Length: 153
Image 1 (cartoon, rainbow, N blue to C red):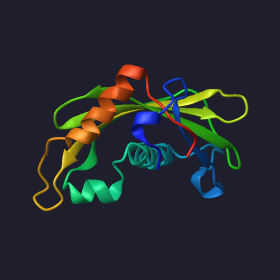
Image 2 (cartoon, rainbow, N blue to C red; image 1 turned 90 degrees about the horizontal axis):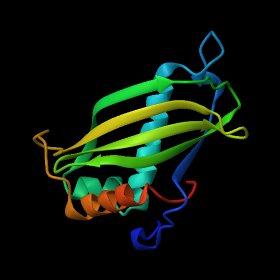
Image 3 (cartoon, rainbow, N blue to C red; image 1 turned 135 degrees about the vertical axis):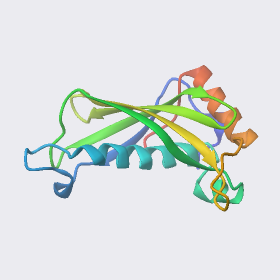
Image 4 (cartoon, helix red, strand yellow; image 1 turned 180 degrees about the vertical axis):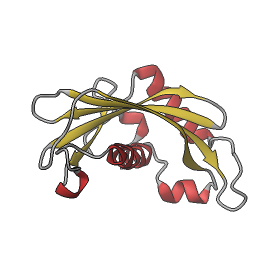
Protein backbone atom coordinates (compact mmCIF):
# COMPACT_ATOMS: atom_id res chain seq x y z
CA UNK A 1 0.00 0.00 0.00
CA UNK A 2 1.26 3.48 -0.86
CA UNK A 3 1.74 6.00 1.94
CA UNK A 4 -0.64 8.90 1.13
CA UNK A 5 1.95 11.38 2.41
CA UNK A 6 4.63 10.31 -0.09
CA UNK A 7 2.62 10.21 -3.31
CA UNK A 8 4.12 11.93 -6.40
CA UNK A 9 1.63 14.60 -7.50
CA UNK A 10 3.00 14.64 -11.07
CA UNK A 11 1.99 11.04 -11.89
CA UNK A 12 -1.77 10.27 -12.18
CA UNK A 13 -3.10 7.27 -10.30
CA UNK A 14 -3.35 4.62 -12.98
CA UNK A 15 -5.08 1.25 -12.91
CA UNK A 16 -4.32 -1.16 -15.78
CA UNK A 17 -6.91 -3.54 -17.26
CA UNK A 18 -6.80 -6.22 -19.92
CA UNK A 19 -9.72 -6.45 -22.33
CA UNK A 20 -10.97 -10.03 -22.22
CA UNK A 21 -12.80 -11.81 -25.03
CA UNK A 22 -15.94 -12.22 -22.89
CA UNK A 23 -16.12 -8.42 -22.40
CA UNK A 24 -16.55 -7.84 -26.14
CA UNK A 25 -19.96 -7.79 -27.83
CA UNK A 26 -21.04 -8.98 -31.29
CA UNK A 27 -19.89 -5.72 -32.84
CA UNK A 28 -16.34 -6.44 -31.67
CA UNK A 29 -16.05 -3.72 -29.03
CA UNK A 30 -16.27 -3.76 -25.24
CA UNK A 31 -19.84 -3.98 -23.96
CA UNK A 32 -20.89 -0.78 -22.14
CA UNK A 33 -21.29 -2.24 -18.65
CA UNK A 34 -17.66 -3.38 -18.49
CA UNK A 35 -16.50 0.25 -18.38
CA UNK A 36 -18.37 0.69 -15.09
CA UNK A 37 -16.94 -2.57 -13.73
CA UNK A 38 -13.40 -1.50 -14.66
CA UNK A 39 -13.92 1.86 -12.97
CA UNK A 40 -15.18 0.11 -9.84
CA UNK A 41 -11.94 -1.90 -9.70
CA UNK A 42 -9.94 1.29 -10.34
CA UNK A 43 -11.82 3.09 -7.55
CA UNK A 44 -11.13 0.26 -5.10
CA UNK A 45 -7.42 0.29 -5.99
CA UNK A 46 -7.25 4.09 -5.77
CA UNK A 47 -8.93 4.25 -2.36
CA UNK A 48 -6.81 1.36 -1.03
CA UNK A 49 -3.70 3.28 -2.09
CA UNK A 50 -4.99 6.13 0.08
CA UNK A 51 -5.38 3.91 3.12
CA UNK A 52 -9.11 3.35 2.62
CA UNK A 53 -9.46 -0.16 1.25
CA UNK A 54 -12.55 -2.34 1.48
CA UNK A 55 -11.67 -3.55 4.99
CA UNK A 56 -11.26 0.02 6.25
CA UNK A 57 -14.54 1.05 4.63
CA UNK A 58 -16.38 -1.84 6.25
CA UNK A 59 -14.77 -1.14 9.64
CA UNK A 60 -15.82 2.52 9.41
CA UNK A 61 -19.32 1.44 8.26
CA UNK A 62 -18.99 3.94 5.41
CA UNK A 63 -18.81 2.03 2.14
CA UNK A 64 -18.68 4.24 -0.98
CA UNK A 65 -21.56 3.25 -3.28
CA UNK A 66 -22.33 4.58 -6.76
CA UNK A 67 -24.89 7.38 -6.67
CA UNK A 68 -24.55 8.72 -10.22
CA UNK A 69 -22.46 7.96 -13.30
CA UNK A 70 -21.89 9.89 -16.53
CA UNK A 71 -20.16 8.08 -19.38
CA UNK A 72 -18.76 9.53 -22.59
CA UNK A 73 -17.47 7.02 -25.14
CA UNK A 74 -14.84 8.43 -27.49
CA UNK A 75 -13.15 5.39 -29.06
CA UNK A 76 -13.55 1.62 -28.83
CA UNK A 77 -11.44 -1.07 -27.22
CA UNK A 78 -11.20 -4.64 -28.54
CA UNK A 79 -10.32 -8.06 -27.11
CA UNK A 80 -6.69 -8.56 -26.10
CA UNK A 81 -6.00 -4.81 -25.89
CA UNK A 82 -4.99 -3.20 -22.61
CA UNK A 83 -6.22 0.03 -21.11
CA UNK A 84 -5.05 2.38 -18.41
CA UNK A 85 -7.61 4.07 -16.19
CA UNK A 86 -6.45 7.39 -14.75
CA UNK A 87 -8.38 8.27 -11.59
CA UNK A 88 -8.64 11.64 -9.87
CA UNK A 89 -11.11 13.27 -7.49
CA UNK A 90 -12.97 16.26 -8.89
CA UNK A 91 -15.34 16.96 -5.97
CA UNK A 92 -15.25 16.13 -2.27
CA UNK A 93 -18.27 16.71 -0.06
CA UNK A 94 -19.31 15.77 3.45
CA UNK A 95 -20.98 12.46 2.55
CA UNK A 96 -19.95 11.96 -1.07
CA UNK A 97 -17.19 12.45 -3.60
CA UNK A 98 -16.84 12.40 -7.37
CA UNK A 99 -14.04 10.68 -9.28
CA UNK A 100 -13.11 11.23 -12.92
CA UNK A 101 -11.94 8.06 -14.68
CA UNK A 102 -10.17 8.48 -18.02
CA UNK A 103 -9.76 5.21 -19.92
CA UNK A 104 -6.83 5.28 -22.36
CA UNK A 105 -5.79 2.56 -24.80
CA UNK A 106 -2.39 1.31 -23.77
CA UNK A 107 0.21 1.80 -26.45
CA UNK A 108 -1.15 4.74 -28.41
CA UNK A 109 -2.69 6.46 -25.36
CA UNK A 110 -5.94 7.24 -27.17
CA UNK A 111 -8.67 8.41 -24.80
CA UNK A 112 -11.50 5.87 -25.19
CA UNK A 113 -13.94 6.91 -22.47
CA UNK A 114 -14.44 9.33 -19.62
CA UNK A 115 -16.57 8.30 -16.66
CA UNK A 116 -17.46 10.76 -13.93
CA UNK A 117 -18.88 8.82 -11.00
CA UNK A 118 -20.28 10.14 -7.73
CA UNK A 119 -20.04 7.87 -4.70
CA UNK A 120 -21.93 8.30 -1.44
CA UNK A 121 -20.72 6.80 1.84
CA UNK A 122 -23.36 4.40 3.15
CA UNK A 123 -23.69 2.39 6.33
CA UNK A 124 -23.87 -1.32 5.67
CA UNK A 125 -26.52 -2.14 8.27
CA UNK A 126 -29.05 0.69 7.91
CA UNK A 127 -28.16 1.47 4.26
CA UNK A 128 -28.18 5.15 5.09
CA UNK A 129 -25.87 7.96 4.06
CA UNK A 130 -22.84 8.58 6.30
CA UNK A 131 -20.21 11.28 6.57
CA UNK A 132 -16.95 10.43 4.87
CA UNK A 133 -14.31 9.37 7.38
CA UNK A 134 -11.97 12.31 8.02
CA UNK A 135 -8.87 10.44 6.82
CA UNK A 136 -10.53 9.58 3.50
CA UNK A 137 -11.86 13.10 3.05
CA UNK A 138 -8.42 14.58 3.75
CA UNK A 139 -6.74 12.24 1.23
CA UNK A 140 -9.33 13.02 -1.46
CA UNK A 141 -9.05 16.77 -0.85
CA UNK A 142 -5.25 16.61 -1.03
CA UNK A 143 -5.39 14.68 -4.32
CA UNK A 144 -7.98 17.09 -5.70
CA UNK A 145 -5.69 20.04 -4.92
CA UNK A 146 -2.69 18.27 -6.44
CA UNK A 147 -4.53 16.95 -9.49
CA UNK A 148 -4.66 13.22 -8.48
CA UNK A 149 -1.73 10.97 -8.00
CA UNK A 150 -0.02 7.58 -7.88
CA UNK A 151 1.33 4.63 -9.79
CA UNK A 152 -0.04 1.79 -11.89
CA UNK A 153 -1.81 -0.86 -9.83
